Length: 618
Image (cartoon, rainbow, N blue to C red):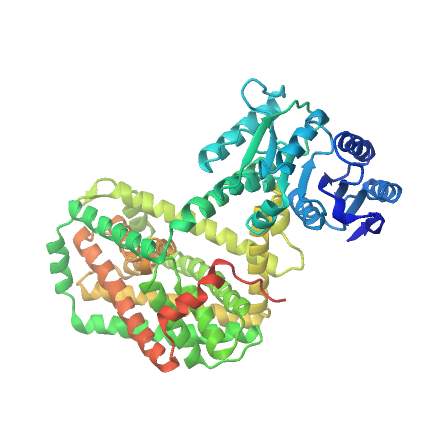
């Protein structure tokens, strides 16, 4: 990046107003715009009281050359060049940070807004009366005459911002704004977008933070074709509205206490609703008949999966260049999964990154990367086991029974099979989507080309889309590093299959402990689908450990696919989850003692990292 003719400003201390012109491929208009801007400013400001900055944003036409020439010929003009696209908001923010004035102004280089309003815009902030000022094309009695292809999306967008983000303004995207240096310095770190949503977010945050914002009507006439892609950018800015709403209205209210209470209430509501269809005493009676020896066997089967988790985690970290013992890593996983049971929103996932960082010095980025790799292999394992189960069902002639269970009519007990079919089809849809996503990620990981960013850019080019693209690409890099060789991929994949297979076997043993007698093929298939859908439901961070969610999903699938009564199905779901959670908690408490880790301290220490994780190291 370069700044031209900056040294020719005679007395920077006298500059009071800085006007920034965001420019991307403006070779036809930039010279006329700069000259008009200087002439208009000179009509109401002293000659050396202002500067004009061309914030050229990675242009590939003659704009940089023209801007350099203008800066060389007039000391009031500066040119900021960027070799790569910063985005409209990014270019503005960079220019404002380097500007010399206390009143910061920008407007679109096509001069769609009549320049007769410039003095009013500047003086509303320069006088100290307002902190922010913006022109408006939609104030009553002064609506701009715009073609429908521009006016309809603009009105819809501004209406959404007013409704969702509780803004009092009517036009957030008019490219004609001013802000005081003090207000900008306080707001710039909070504004996350760096493209078209930047000024909307600036206005919304300014109102939320109590700054004085003035909106006044301007005469506006569209010039040329808009650079806003009405599909790509409107979609992208819609996602930004949701993001800003979450950050401003929802996230501040989600304290650990609120989340814990909400999760508890959701669980209680689910249990209360369940009593409408089920007799709790009947459920308890079914559970009381469980064979204690088989329940203990189920716990032992599940316990065997934990060293396998430690072995898998060791293999992943080894591929990333970190060499640790299985015992320590198994303990770290025990602690993190215990954290997920105790705290909502899957806070335990970040706890593991904290444990390996605090006890073995593994950087946070690597800790999160290893978690990401595990998630990929979990999805691959579910997909692989699903294939194995379906092949087994077909080979043993059980396909007809399975289809009959899903498509049959009527009800079992008081639970409609229609609800089961919906759950089964939703699970199938989620499974197909997961398989497609994993195949795409694996395909990207096996090549040097990036398939993710071009696909996302077709939908949106704003900063949020770029953020999503970076997350996905980081996911791919993590997978490459964790399974960069065929041997590593096979080794980690086999251990993942064994982990999930033992999870399913645990459920099978629990069903047997409750006296369930089904054809072995059907028993295996039902257990696999119930466990898989139950664990998919636990992904939703609605209750600690997914308690309630797992049981509901497990029960619906069992009732939908078998003649098992709802009371017995919910009893099996509760007992299966309870056995697994008891093993997890016992292992977690023991590991915390052995590794001298406080769970509450780990959650607090990892909180900031969890909210804004560091980028993965290359």
